[in-house]
Amino acid sequence: MEIKLTEHADEKGSYGIQVSFLDSAGDSVAPKTLAWSLVDLAGNVINSRKDVAVASPGSSEIVSLRGNDLAIITASNRQEQRILIVSGTYDDINLGADAPFYGEIRFVVDNQTNVITPSP
Image 1 (cartoon, rainbow, N blue to C red):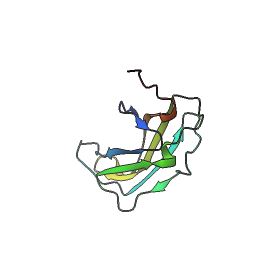
Image 2 (image 1 turned 90 degrees about the vertical axis):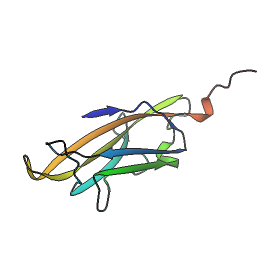
Image 3 (image 1 turned 180 degrees about the vertical axis):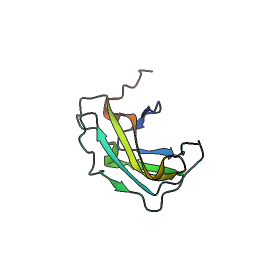
């Protein structure tokens, strides 16, 4: 499943993405395992953020991105897209123990050096 966020991140700023987990019955569930990765559209890992494990994950977590996580790779780009990949396992009454999950959250990083300031 892919989700596209409408709020853009600022280059080199801070950006939090909240992820929440539901079981097949629609009830909140804490994953047994949870990891995340940050990639560009070509699948290149950004800032060595590959398979970052979350210790003792809850039913809702905030992935905090900042600094080089939000760096613009090609200086001439006004914006660049990023994908936060979340994956792990959880126990589900219908799907059984250690059911895997995978999701992609797509968002845009705005290049702050190319922002056009209107004239007075």
